[in-house]
Picture 1 (spheres, rainbow, N blue to C red):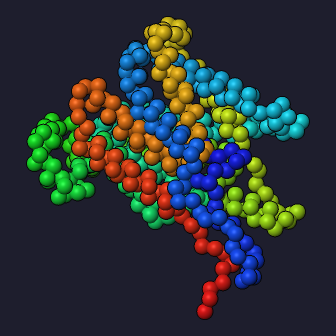
Picture 2: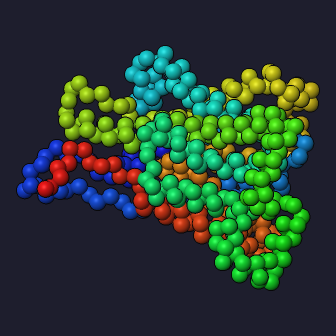
Picture 3: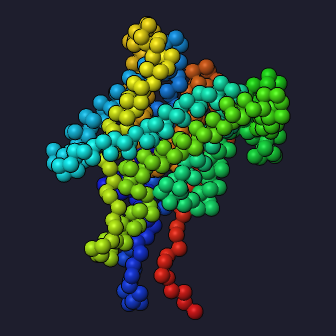
Amino acid sequence: TESTSSNIPSSVQPASTLTKTLAPSAPSTASPPTTSGLSPKAILFMILLSLQFGLQPLLVRRFTPPTINKSTVVFVQEIIKLVISLKVYLSTTTREQQRSDWGDGGRPHLLLRQLAIAGLPAALYCVQNLASLLAYQNLDPVQFNVLNQTKTLSAALCCYLVLGARQSGLQMAALGMLLSAALVLEKILPVSMLMPGLGRSVSGAAGVGAASAAATASGGVSRGLPATLSGLISSLGSGSTARRVTHGVLPILLASFLSGLAGALVQKAVQGGGKQVRRIRAEAVTQSSSTASVPSRPKNFYLFSTELGLASIFLLLISFVFSGDGRRIAANGFFHGWTPSTLVPILTQSAGGIVVGLVTKYAGSVRKGFALIFGMLLSGLVQAWSTGGALGFEQMVGLVLASASLLLHTRYPYRPKPRGSVVAV
């Protein structure tokens, strides 16, 4: 879920700095806004996240025994993330900075408050996982995937609520394109609905049309968005309405919202408050006012990741006391079902957890969704290559939609109207 450290990248800086002078003879020295919207670090970490997210399912299926206790895997992942984050933090900061970060200049009682701040997103992620599991048990896979794709939209909403980060009209259109790309890749949204002419021409092509017809006839996940929504609506009118809504639809929508909220909170912690807060900070410095309230500086990412890991481990330990997984650990041992190769997906998932934070730090929690969609595409490509298949038409359309949406989202950010501007008559 992070954003920027003390050096705020251009992708999250305000488009311009408000100037107070109106003298016509003073030429503007403000640098032009960036057009890419992504710093080199943001692009690098988004690529790494896409690779990890795309390859992780294959590694899990290959190296994780199906009978393993999943809670022990998550627990070890959190410990590894904690160790890596703490090691990087200690090796990249001075003793003075560490004392200031952990004790705020000799006030170690503030450490508990810092851990509490990290504990909130950790608790939100924990509830999100439980809600997702409950929804998956009460919805069919297609309905689950349709509703689960609202995470990026939830991230945009929560970034606005928590950080005051607005989306331009074109950025909102880009998020809609990204949602369409995800549904196309999942073979939920038929390409013919987006491009009727192209869909008909491709359906007539050898191989593709047959595969599409076979998938539709089989009643699998390729049955299409209209059938999915129709099935969901019709099921709400059946006798299982109450359970499907309370144990399926509402939990997955809650999980989607909590994912966006936790990401926005993490982004706020490591960015120091988002664009609106940074604008207030810049104006306070410009005014040189001794009474101006300047927001606190961004938290060191690796320190916050360490605190987040401590909070997550604490919550997992509590869950062991009350859950069935804890009883299985007591009966069979912590490492029951483990093999040496089990560490392979655990290490990659731990590294991926840190990369998720770095993407949130340098690109924001909304654009993290773009990296995950490209990871879905990569996973499909690797699976097709491993089975000797070819690149599917849905994957090609999904790639075009995801690429176009990312380009649109980065090139046309929201630009607030300058305050105090004089309109010439």
